[in-house]
Amino acid sequence: MKSKNFIIFSSIDWDINWQLHHELVTSLLEEGSKILFIENTGTRNLKFSDFSRVFSRIKKWFYSKKGYKIINNNFLLYSPLVLPFPYNKFSTKINSYLTIRSIKNWIKNTGNKDICFISFLPTPLVFNVFTNINSIYKIYYCADDMIRSNKYNLKNIYEQNFIKKVDTVFCTSHNLFNKCKEFNNSTYLIPSGVNFLKFQKVYGIKNNNYNLNKYNKPIIGYIGAITKVFDKKLLAYLSTNFPKYTFMIIGKEHTDIKELKKNKNIKFIGHVDHDKIPFYLKIFDLAIIPYLKNNFTENVYSFKLNEYLAMGLPVITTDLNEFKIFENQYPGTIYVSKSYEEFKNYLDRDFSIYRKNKKQRIEVARENSWSNRFSQIKEIFEINYNNNIASFRKKEESEQFNFLKSRSLITYIFIPLLFLYFVTFYSPFFYYLSKGLEEDYTIKKADAIVVFSGDGYSGYENLGFQKRTLDVLKYYRSGYAKKIYVSSGKEQKISQVEIIKALLIQNNVREKDIKIFTTYPSSTYENILMVENELERNKIDEIIFITAPFHSKRSSLIWKKNAPQIKVYFAEPIDKKNKLSSYLNYEEIKVVLYEYLAILYNYFKGRI
Image 1 (cartoon, rainbow, N blue to C red):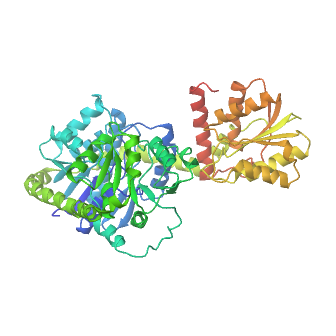
Image 2 (cartoon, rainbow, N blue to C red):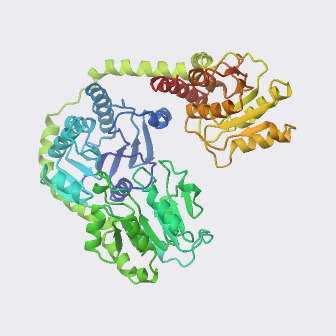
Image 3 (tube, rainbow, N blue to C red):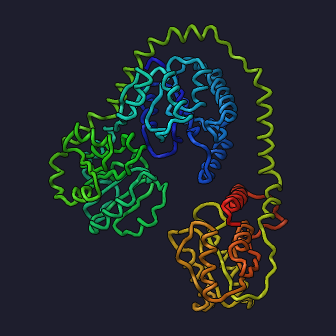
């Protein structure tokens, strides 16, 4: 590459599953380039489910140098704080100003003026950066249908304008290519490739270093994130029809799969580092890509396809456009199924039929290797670079950077952020805010003790059940109630309700006095409705309610609105924050903020 300085606007964060973005960055670094990699700045408005990701980004920003993190001498990671409304004019102005200023400072301090932009996002923010920072070359890498809508709206307008203004567009699928070619003649079809040498190195190893021989054969495998486009019904159908097969699913879970986990022959491995993926593929007998067919997946060229083929694996897919094209181009390598029945029939074949084309599949993967893809990119880049360098130099000579005018805005932003930081971590503000989440802890004798475990703590796993057990023992032994009902708002690998029951019995509580709920509702609201039904059935009118300190207020409001006939006394939990410690830690602050947002959410849903 003639240009050594790339600024990449990514559509993902760097620490997510290995994807095309990672291969591109790795290849550019091997060419000696310097890269500023800007993590995902968003393509949609913030949702309630994004709360944890927002906290993660804020935390990442505070523990970095103004959002920057040095990976190595040539690779700098930037995690900007942006207002989460990418198509709002006000947000775009603020986000653009801060991002442009930050990038200009990076250019000024590093002396890297010969900039080339690559963006995976066609958003107003990126467009403003492209417009306001002089660069040699601007590339839109259309690796995904970022708009995900057939309706002509503001997002479509922005993307079309973006495509028109960049120098070159790279597309990973035929549908994306056809769409972009309409607005930019310098559009190229370059699908995702595979790091062929990495996979072939493992393919040639006779002994697998990983203990993966404990699974029943044949093994039907899938690698990749488990998202909303993953056809869960298809996997359940296949699992039921082939009970002696092992279905191995490797990747992070981004959708509810608790029903699938009931199938004993489906093994969810979770996230595996990309360097270890070839070792898992080595034990697969057959690979699958069970995607739902919709507007989004019809534009997808699966990154994992050539990784499967590099290990000689036959691949069975659903009926998506790119797979059909691939099957016609390389017959005998993948098998596209138009229905569940056809998918099942492919799995019901004698697998020796598939082994005949093993070498052919490896050769197809070699042809579709990332090194070949990158050679195409490099060739296109060099031609356009030479055409653009003269105009870049001319503009550079006339352009003046003036940072003095921006100081007042920085003052307005930095001081409030600094104030917010000190209020959060060095003042009792959140302690007093947390007091509003507690209830009046005055109790009387009642018909039963109801305890909720798992709610009111940060993270999926917590040890709150130990404290709730001690709370129950305190009031049970004191004779406040003779019956105990235990429920949990979160599903755990090892059931907390079972643990609490065991601990209570161990401490001389009669087993017949304990009722546990083995169903895990998705919210406190559903949990209360479930318990209320059981209380009504047993004609219980008064209860002592035990839950985490910060969870009390939300529970109280939901109880009063949805079960007014039941008198609820709130027991004081042993881990209630006391005056001796008037500062909350980071995890406690997260819970406090979450609880207030959850109260608002339940209010607007009409639950309180």
